[in-house]
Length: 228
Image (tube, rainbow, N blue to C red; front, side, top):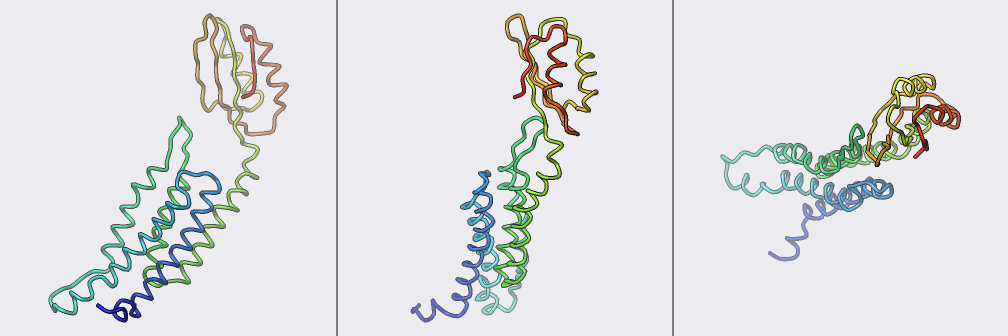
């Protein structure tokens, strides 16, 4: 095989598509890397370029066999379908569950979407790939800020209590109801004769935290209260 056969029109087209997949998936990966997420710059590039490679294989990899044998038939959508379903294992690895809190779902979705981008670029649908990349970046960057603005009032509040035997939970719950607070998670640990109670509260409306701590401190058998 000479150089002219190696660098034919198909090969140059493949280089362009791999490069476009590298650029677009790298942009999304950079946003994830910048925000210190599990799957970052390199992971997204590998997924995007790898998916593009699989699509190119599906389109160009079997032309010789189909031209040589009339009875050979190939479905170019079969390999891409396996890429989309198989990328789930990588996305699942970015999801972490801590009690009721789940982290990594957005990153898992971005990895799955980058796989789709690679396939689209591999098929030569550049306009759609660029448009989708812009939409993804806008969603990851700006919608996150919008969520922070509108959900700021619902920011969870964490408090730590050091209590003695005999504390009545009813009195504590009445205070939470007064401030319109909902218990999301509570952990109790033994410390000699006292107990430390870590409580995570859903803050639905703006509250006076100092007044909340004062009212909890005034309860009998509560020796210490602090926000964590």
